[in-house]
Each structure stands twice: as C-alpha cells, then as structure tokens.
Image (cartoon, rainbow, N blue to C red; front, side, top):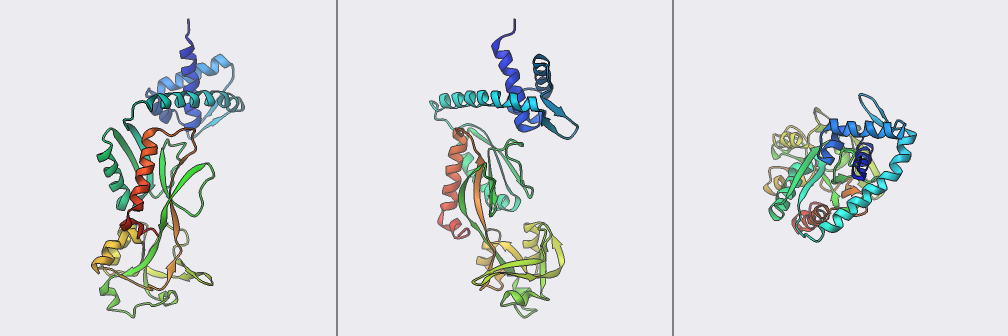
Length: 306
C-alpha cells in the first residue's frame, strides 16, 4: 500500500521541476537522479489524469492544470522547509552549500576574497561561486544570492545596498608623455581610447554634470570585452581606459596609471546584494549577507564604493 510520504514525494518533485524549469536542477536540489524525478512527475500526472508540464528539448512550461496544482503544493513545500529551518536553528552551526553569482570583474577583484574569508570563519560552509558577465536567473538556476551592479532591480528581489561602483578614466604615464593629456570630456575626441565591447553603446561615454548628463563619442584601435584585458592594455600605454575604481585603485596608488579628466564624473551604478524573497532564509545565507555588508563597510573598500 502506498504511503502518504510517497505521495508527498511526488508532489515535491513536481514543485521543484516547476520552480527550476529543469529536471536536472530539480534532481540536484532533491539529491536524487534525474530519471527518478522524471518518473515521479510522470506517475503524478497519471494519478491526476492530466498533463502538468509541457516538455520540449529547450524548455519546460506549466500547463493550466500544472499552475493550479503548483499553487497548492508550493505552500506545502515552503511550510516543510520552514519547519526544517526552525528545527535547524537549535543547532547554531553555520553549514551547507551557498550558491553565489557576481559580475566577473568584481568577483575577480573582491568576491573571491570574500568567499575565502567567509570559509575561514565558517569552514562547514561550501561556496559555489559563479563569476560571469551574464546576469543569472536566481530562481531558475538555484542561486541563493547575487551581487548586482544596477540602477534598478526586479521587484521580487530583496536588496541590501553595498555602495556605488564608480568608473574613472586612466592612462599610463608613457601614453600621456606622447600626447596632450585630455582635461575635459570633450578633449577625448580624437584621443586613442580603449572601447569596452561588452556594452551596447560602448563608443559613447556618459558624464554626470551639474546641468545634466553629457554623452561623448570616443574611438580607438582596440575593442575588448574584459576589464582585466582593458587594464592590461592601459598599463601598456595602448590607450585611455574607462575602468571601475576597484579594478585600478592599486595602480593609481603606485603611479603606474594616472587619472585623465579628473574633474569629470562618469555615470555611476549602485551595488547591491540581492536574493529572492523567501519566508525564512537559511542560517548560512543570513550570516553570509551580514558578512558581505561588513566587508564593504571597511574604510578602505568604502572609499572605492562611495
């Protein structure tokens, strides 16, 4: 005779697939094989006598029946997770796997250090860190948190401000010795600039002024989509570069790069720590969020993000 636990297991398997839009990611979350999850969902559909999911080679979508069923079983899954987390609070050990995604350049400069420092303090936590120029879907791809650089955020995200990411114009002393150094944004016309090909309007640099935003066209013989490569080219004297302050603050201190148009302010973007809205965050996520905020509150780093 089938147990209530087996019926609940099928409902939770379906809920995981529906939320993540993937049998593979659902299997990873549930700690079982993809084939097992597929069988659980198929049997559930037979028992209910209706199709819950549309499956294609590229996507998984809910049917009308699937959406109705999910509304009921999602609440059960959340209540079960809440109960498990409430019990786990009796054990104050911070443990488990934490999945974090961040922009590539910021990750290389700071987030890897954050992950290492957190792991030293909480060795029972495993960190799965994704660094990419692509913005990840936190829910569909199963991430706990993300560090985002953006003026606006989705309304379903919880956000904590970390500061403001600012960019500056820099050039190597060797380049500035060969040319008349630009003193204002308009002087960049005709100057050799390194263009960041990652951005759609890469050849127009925006400057904030008291009377509004000014767009200045720039050009140069080099286009590249990596801050690390742009920094290296700037150090070699290949052109004027537009780079985040956190990438080149040490180069400025050492004198290997110098500010150009220092009186101008490039448009800045707020930096956030974000996560999907949930009833109760796992302890490791809450502790990590607090750790990240303390990290950015350090006076040295605050100077780079204010």
